[in-house]
Image 1 (cartoon, rainbow, N blue to C red):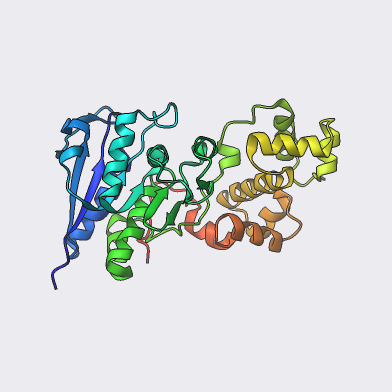
Image 2: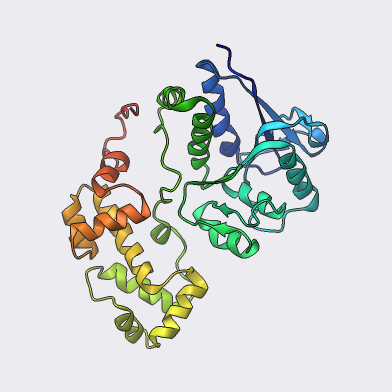
Length: 329
């Protein structure tokens, strides 16, 4: 049986993130080897070639104005998108293409293009964890989910950092052709068939920049220095000489969370680091300040959607870079 042709358009612009384009494109290209029929068309304003994040020129197939209707529109990201308002011409191109497409999928900071075009209003969305707070501020009518790898709201999809674009492409592939073909593509590309869309982006609290407010940095330093210590709201507030209410306001204003949720996330990240270094889950729970393994398990369920043991088996490094990982099953 011949598969129905599925047209995929990619909106390209100067400064696009190369992997945002090539990652999903490889998924669809590989799917064609197993019976799918995806046809990729790269479009830009004026139909001109564009420059990528790595300096390579990207050839373009068509002008946005002449592009056909697409079954799927991919809106890639770029480092410049969070830094300044999107120019009106690119916003209009996004809106025009989206209106003529069956479904729209933004990769990483491509969500800022959807937001500028009004396509996230009233919708759930995500982007790279470094920019989720900015996306929420810039587009307050969107419901930004800061931890998700990718989010579907109707026919609109958004994804986290660049490799999450591959997860999203696999999810789109599974919608079109089911799990068997998707599994074959994932194994061929040596990636996990699909990390769940709601799975948390990893370690935002430890990998991200330190809080700007000195009081919040003191709280962060105190918890990281002694994760098993007494870190109740009252204790933390007393340590930094502010009221519990004022401390809570500062956390909400800068970090969009509460002190206690932040303490849990710090401990959670510490536990993940311990698991990565080879400690078992019980040891990781105790050293990270969790009262029991069960409380750590609940934290992993909330933040990653998997157990500590599954996390360790799936994501921890082997410690020998020369080993070839087994293909996913």
